[in-house]
Image 1 (cartoon, rainbow, N blue to C red):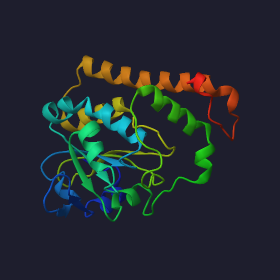
Image 2: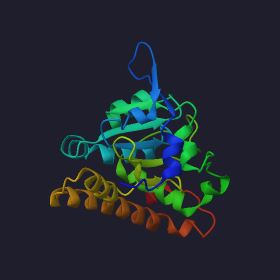
Image 3: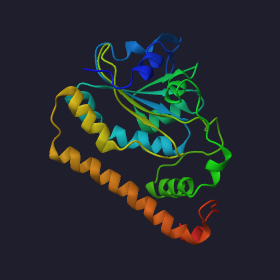
Image 4: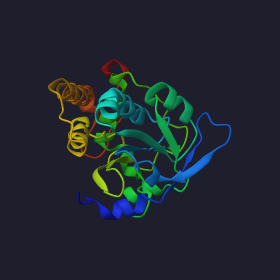
Length: 237
């Protein structure tokens, strides 16, 4: 198969990752070891305490049996900070998590440089809708602990040296990778046909995310314009 994103692959394959959670002593390895034997989904987490990141991890975790056991994938997250990592993994991800100390995956998503959320992101309606959507999801986190301005994303990497099949770049704080698209690409890479039940589950999750977002927008629409939003009153949540 042809590598769809060769520049991204070359940027991530030699990134040094650290295995640290629950370990008496940390060990390091090259990222390419992750997909040496199996295709791999790599979720590049913006911040372990971020409620949006926890929401995405929770959604994808609900498809773990399909992705890992039936399709033969590996699922991992990479983090650029260790603060809050244990809580994130124990409560929301429950899988492999590694520290990217050089922020190599984050730089790859930015074309060689870190992508930082600018100050105008904080006043965009899309961010407020994402925040209120998350409140309705029931997934909680913290807003101020750690560095949460570096955008993340998601890669689907084929086995061995076959390269990247899919990438998702977070461009607005709180945007989530479409789970139906993730499953579709995993199906293509693995050759395992998606069952209708799995497709419907993914579509339902996306619909629920969209419904929460629309409800949040409706609840706060009188307090936003095209450029600036203020928090809606508690009664509107």
